[in-house]
Image 1: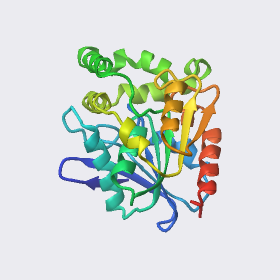
Image 2: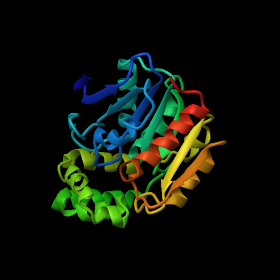
Image 3: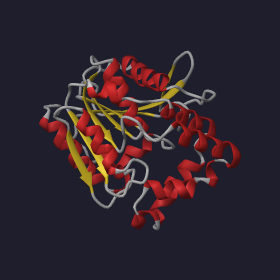
Image 4: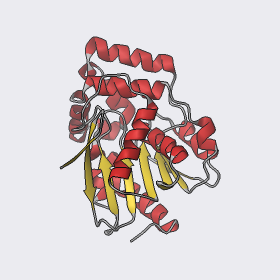
Length: 263
């Protein structure tokens, strides 16, 4: 277990694979930690340098007081990569992680060779919606919201099985301050203009049963980036890397091969 300590936060980081391997950096969704990618990284080709981290307020990273700005979340990813001396990486971001990836690509093209934007948008929801969600967290805690979150996250077959239990538990044990802080970051973010200016390889992934970022929203994001490849995974919700990790890993591996980012 590695912790990178900065002036305002300490971030939990896990690195797998050889130090000289082509780097792939993963950014998690709201309410999850780096275990979100466990089944995907195990299915990827050997020789890649796979870097995962818990964003602030999640997992084993420290939890500064809310609210957070998207700029701070992007800066955290930037500092992780700088500390690990990573350049020309493929950034794989899901949900808020996909927004972080968009912001990082716009800010630091020296760090980012390509992006995989999964179950995300240039803008997600409205400020009013996120303010309401923050108020619900403050009033009843995440445990009172976890059933509704699972409904947005997973297709019915997965959601009604025992497999959903650890994910529900992950949400319920997420620091409420961290969850609320990231809600505020999403509320204040609109990447339409900056993402439309990106000129880099992009794979954009949606789930056809996604209740948080519906396929049309994700497809709209893909259309902002010239040449972006859009893929729809069937029978999954907001976290296709959990419900169908093999299919997800195959899409990611194919993209890495297509752009020449392989060991």
